[in-house]
Image (cartoon, rainbow, N blue to C red):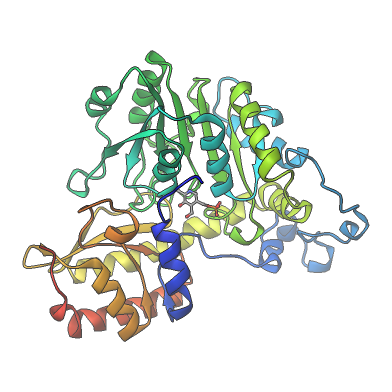
Length: 412
Ligand SMILES: Cc1ncc(COP(=O)(O)O)c(C=O)c1O
């Protein structure tokens, strides 16, 4: 039996989600209905009569044969993704460089199972989504966590990376934009990571599921992070998803992409064992969203993220006596530290009492993102939700700060 650590975040959410009145724990931009998606299509802007606008699932679909569909993902969807990744790349990707998967969790699973072996040394950015280090560890790899700190703006230290490289280092794993901090890895740091990987023949695995939810950095900023696919190095593989920036977690469509055909071939083989193909209906909705609605959908989500982040910032400013953060730059979550008289509060008890007393669900950082003693006092707050839910949730959190915060235990 392959042993793997319990997936702390997912177990926490599975248990607590049903108890939440105000769910501020999600990391998906506010999920969208197919009706609303249709209203965001480019053709809807020119058609006063919505009956003339093609819906995400057009009626022709009734005559589609429900066979497996395209084995590696629909050609239309893979072509669209390849062209989106190629906008800034010196060598364009082809549809064959992309594989469609049921969500990015499946893409990440395939990447590690296909490429990672017992005895490999894997360097993984930290904190991050647990799958990115627990899964290679379950396969017998040795993991070194490339740690970042809030006090240092979650900055990755390149000199530290150089010191971590060993002859058997096979992968550097990064997550950009980043869960749970909402930080980005800036372009110059990405370029240094790629240079080091190139010098040591290391493969870079980049989980980019929060692209392109860039609410607080402009694409013309010189440190705006590109996908690692456009940095001119072949030994990179990325995962992406419709779940986060595109609000469509319910269709379960993700992907992996690489310019390196050998990496793709290895993942294809594992995909044949685990997936065979992805639902044709799901792929059709994903294609529709990325072809017909891309600009309006991203405008909706980046606008919502910006507006809601302002509300969260106001809360933080009003409660500076108890909390601190590095304001997120991208993605849908913020990592906030709560302390009393300079000592971190017990984040697990905090989240538990907040849920019981006020019905607000947030995520304790030490439980869901920390190993050992890490991230005491931190909580992850998902803010790209319905504005009304965020406003009411923050009102309840304010009430808790007045009545329940004083009684919280602090960490040793
Ligand atoms: C960094 C990261 N990767 C992958 C996933 C899984 O996403 P998906 O819904 O596409 O499976 C998540 C979900 O929270 C995530 O945060």
